[in-house]
Every structure is written in C-alpha cells, then in structure tokens.
Length: 299
Image (cartoon, rainbow, N blue to C red):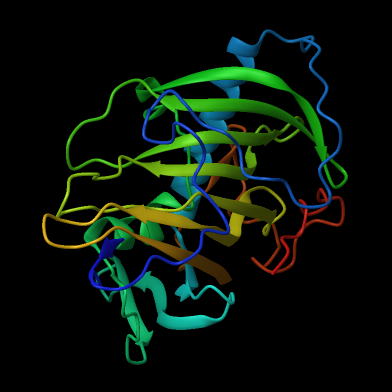
C-alpha cells in the first residue's frame, strides 16, 4: 500500500504493526478472536519434523485440487479516520475460473469507483489479495521457510498443531509469509493463518506497507480446507518524503472466498493417494463426518 496524501496531519494511532515487523525473523501474532483455546506447549508424540513433512505434502495435494476449482473472491480495502469511520474504499469482485481452453483466468465482474485518497493500491497489494492471503505451504515451497513447532491448541472444536513460519531469505520481487499457522491434527492441513506478507518497502518516497492479517479456512468438499475469509487491519506508519510530513493510515482489508465449484468432469483429484474425483458428492455437499469450521472471525 503506497501513501499518496502527504500534506495532512497524522491520524491518531489505534492499532500498530507488530514490534520488529520489518525483521523477517520477528513476528508478534495478532490478538486471537474467540474460539481459540489455551496453548499447550508440550511436545507432540510424533516428531515435529515428521508432522511438517506430512502437512506440506497435504498442502501440495490441496494446491493441486484448488487449481481445479472455480470460486468468487470479494476484496475490500478501506481507510479509516480517527473516529474509526471509513473515508475511502477500493472494492473488487473477481471470478476465478477457466477460459474455453481450460486455462486458469480471473475476470473482474464488479469494480466501483476507487475512493481511496490517502493511499493507493500497489502491485504487491494485488499480489497479496490474489495469492498471499490464501497462503498455501506446499512441499515445494516449504524449503524457503523455517518452520518451528509452537504447541497444540483448539480452534473451536478442531484440534490443531501450531507452527511459526519465517522466510529463510527474501528475494526481490517475491512475496513471503511471516507468521503463525494452525494445522488440523487429523487432516494435517492449514485451517488458520495469522501473519504478514513481506517484505515492506520502507524507503522514503517509495514506501509500500502492508497490515497484518488472519485467514480462516473451512472444509468445503469433505477433504480439503479452503480459504473462506481474510481480515487484515493495522496502522501503516508512512515516514514521508523530503518535502512532506509523516502520516499514519488506519487500513482494513477484508476478502471473502465463496462459490467453490469443481471444474469439468475430467478432473482427477488425489487425496491420500486415492482418486476421490468420483465420490458422489458435489463441492457444496461435504461429508457428514467433516470437521467443524474453525473460529468465526469478528466482522
């Protein structure tokens, strides 16, 4: 998110980014909503390294399955004044689908006038909305991260294993996740993500800052946990340029992911080494024994 309204008084800070947020190895989780139980710090019976390997493999399966689903993404970015009232908004509805050749594509179906005044959308903002907030940690990508076991914790009625995730190194033009994930102890898939997308650009006159966020997943087809809701919020501290004053901007992001549907009849989806494509279920009719959804966010 880039600042573009320089000559205004700074807005009183209500929320702040985590201390040391610019450091790729430092992260303080956002306050958790209701539904999160007490964190159990005891070691699991299975070595954490083995759990990490298994859940990364499950995430790879999920990524492949997701590539065969269509869905709608509704994204809203708002700035709030010192009375916590919205004073600018960017809003866009996209259908993630396939073209006649079967190629993955995104089509904007609704995009009213952008009323953001104090900040502007940057390419990294759009990249985070399209891919970052729905973070998937596959076997291929996990080599880029340090993953540390934290403990065990209930998210509503779901027993989860908690890990801190930090990028090993940051390359230019690439976006990375920094934060904490909750992994279903039975399905070994991510159900909640809490962190930030990094890096931020903190150079004067070219600052590009991003708030912390949480993403909740829900079991949609009886096998995989799909992203359903993201909320990000925080104060972005813009330092200003040589001829402008510093400014704090209270920013709020919300993204909803809906209408998941399996594409075509020739898609083959593998789960635990088994072909589950012809399981007699529609995408919106999950198994009767599916796990409960994770904690519902406070909207």
